[in-house]
Image (cartoon, rainbow, N blue to C red):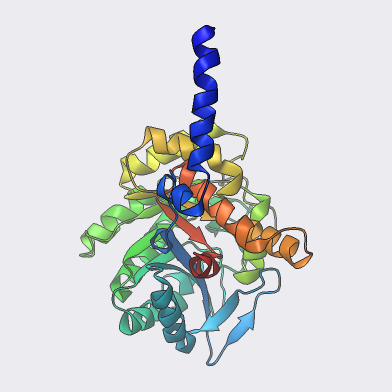
Length: 330
């Protein structure tokens, strides 16, 4: 007891001294956030000169391919190394065929990005929900059920078409069972054995995706996605999903959404050695924007605190709509 009484004040005094100035605080900071940690999502659409605001996501836009060089210049100037592409097709059908068409919107966007900025890391979202008339992530049977096994070949075709267009990383987000096991050999057989897969491994059926579904025009026309996305209540299941994707050949695994799942990110970081991504999703972005617009929060301080928390939990890669603003503030 005597020892504790003597040493605790000294320890607290040291902590106070280390917080005394901004320079000292920066020197001893445990978690360091950098623009190099960020991936910036882009929504690409057909047409020319298109820069359409996304109403629930202030500061975000649906843009046409001819606008991409401007985006690459901005990202390069901010030190952000990568983008994640989502496409809005000209037409939708029951099988989401523009998702795997060689001249699809994402495929053309990849070519444009790699021509404008060869060093930019281009990641493509591999899913059917943006391209299907029913808005589900897979093939739907006449009974209205998503057919997991019938979907896998289409996802593999999409991934290969993205790699052929020049994508650096393909990122299946559909949450079909066995999708990584279908995509990996398809890439290998197509001569793209060096193309990594970033799997949306622990992707929850979350309320935080609402603004994204407006941005990507991807809301399901009936039912919901709880049959193939994860229950947010299940952390052990999340570990099993991540482990399964790793066993099937994933090179990077992702937790989505990020902010409600800091415990999942931390647990995954402790359990698995692969690079770990976290998606700071549209609803998280929209909440901060709305609170800041109402004067309830300081947007800069709040955003940097959120992103630092995601990094501190263990994420190596942070996908965020706030990436450009955060890079400027940093």
